[in-house]
Image 1: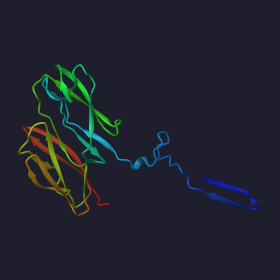
Image 2: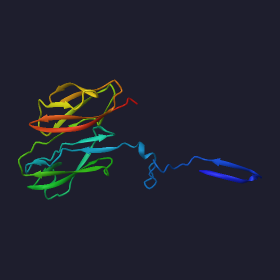
Image 3: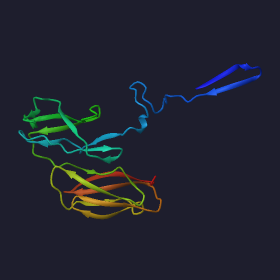
Image 4: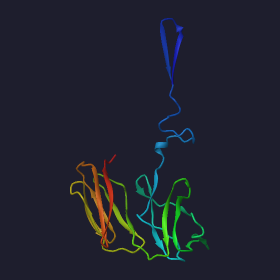
Length: 210
């Protein structure tokens, strides 16, 4: 904020500057939240396609909550959107009848952060999976990635589309450990997991240490 003083001394203009208390770029004035850009960013990662269950099954979806680009353990609530098809019985979310419906996965402490997942009831279980892991790796650091599924997995094949940004250090069952280069080479690469004749990919960035 800038204020001008035209009256104190003839011929001289004094300028008084004070720091604006509200930053219109980083503050959410409407919701009274300061430094919005510094708040944690959450998202849900789900496999592509509906998750399948038999009538009478407990609904236990597979998912990962990401916080600022990294998987994080956090409490969630699962809300059925059609209680004629799915509802809680004795504390367990249970599939009641055949068909397709949706459930809502939401953070327990931040229920406005959620994602809806499609589920299909009464069909043979279909294999679905996705790669779990950080969205980025810092230079000369290692990170573990895993092909996640509702089934137990073994002998997953992993590969990357580069030999300059990263290398795969080792593979253990459904997991692999990736090491980022220490030569200041930045960029993105694609990690591919192959299992049961199906391909799953994740784009990952190599970023600076700071």
